[in-house]
Length: 183
Image (cartoon, rainbow, N blue to C red):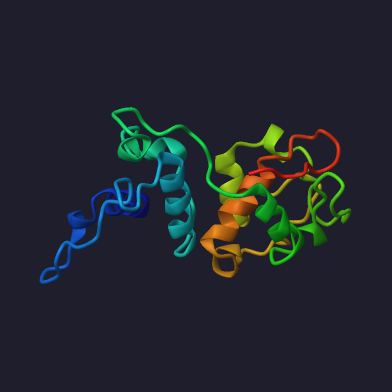
């Protein structure tokens, strides 16, 4: 079993891999009281993978039935990435320090890393999420030196800061200045 499969199964069925002698007390994360939707499960699995190595979880790895209880029925939850773009912009400009190497609309101007002003238009959410957590594993953008982007965001950002940063980056579609991010 791959680490990815283990993480997903353990989130959806915490009793699947119990250590002998321990009770099955963890709730399924896609059911109340936690009630994560499918995209939140995806973000959580990617974050957990980042703590131990390569991030390779894709949205389609999360079963379509996951999050159905949180969505209020038999249909899979609507695909909506969690996160607050406005808080993500604050991470971009603050704790993440992204603006020091990247431009995002009117924010930043450094030529060290690629301009991210259109990142949501030219890259998938999968790529953006993985690139933050494992920059070397996603290749290097042509014209930029390899190994410059820090590989430590999985350790330095909280899971909330990470999903907020991703939410902000997904607002960057090249319409001029970085948008006044809305939740």
